[in-house]
Length: 166
Image 1 (cartoon, helix red, strand yellow):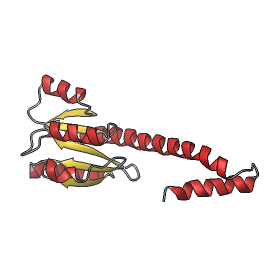
Image 2: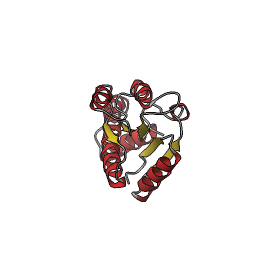
Image 3: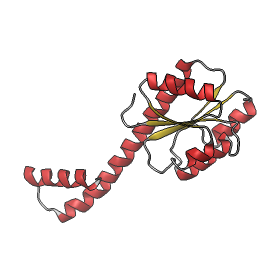
C-alpha cells in the first residue's frame, strides 16, 4: 500500500496469522510474520520502514514486552496490539506504554487493514520528516564547503546530498 513500509506481524495462532497476512497482502502491504516475539525482535531496528502488529498473549515475551522493547529501540515506531482477552485496563496500559492502537479479537479484516494503513501513513511521514531534517542539517554544512549560488553549483549540492544517503 505505502511504498517501502513493511508490516511485522506477530501472532502465535496459525489460523489468525495466516488470515491476517492474507488480508494485509490483499490490501497491498508487504508482510513478514512471526509466531513469537523473540523471533521478531531481531528485525526491529531504529529508523526501519515498518510497523509492528502483535498479539498480546504470546508464549515467552508477550505483546506488552515487545511493545516496551520496540519503543526502547525507537519511540516513534507504531506498534498495534491485538488481543482476544482485552479489557479496558490492559488497553489503557498499552496506550500509556506507547501503543499506536489496540484491536480486540475477533476483528474484521477491513478494520485491521484500516488501522495498519493509518499507522503506515504515520510511519512514512515520520521517516520523511527525519530524512528532511537530516538533509537540512547537512545542507548548512555543504553550503559551507561548496560556495556559490549559480544553478550548476546548486545542482552539485543536490547531487551530493542525494548520494550522501547511499
